[in-house]
Amino acid sequence: MDVLVNHGLFVAVVDGQTVGSLRVVEDGNNRSRVVRGERVYIQNFSVHKSYRRRGYGRELLTFVLEWYQKQGILEVTLAVESRNEIARELYQKMEFERIRECKDARQNIKYDLMLHKYGKKVL
Image (cartoon, rainbow, N blue to C red; front, side, top):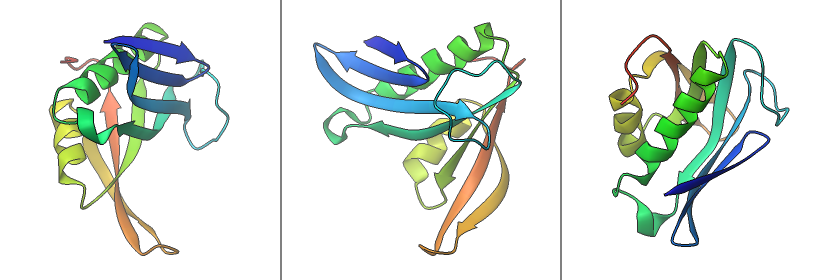
């Protein structure tokens, strides 16, 4: 798997096909640039349906965590829909910890805000 990087956008490619992507922004901000602060936020993380459960999501997330660790970032956060058990399982294996539950009142959806702190082993 190759990972293409462009201003906080990470795209996973296998045999010329895009299999997944995610975007990283400054925590609490929608600016799509690489951040030189302490915390970044992962948003829009997805793996194409036909490539799920093959390890590509884990590989992409590992790449991104290692990338930002080298940039000196201390924490990475993300929000995951509470009922998305597959994604929650991946994040827990990658040593993200649940901070709190959030709710999108417009869509009546519950989310868990999760945090990864460096200093832990990245799988």
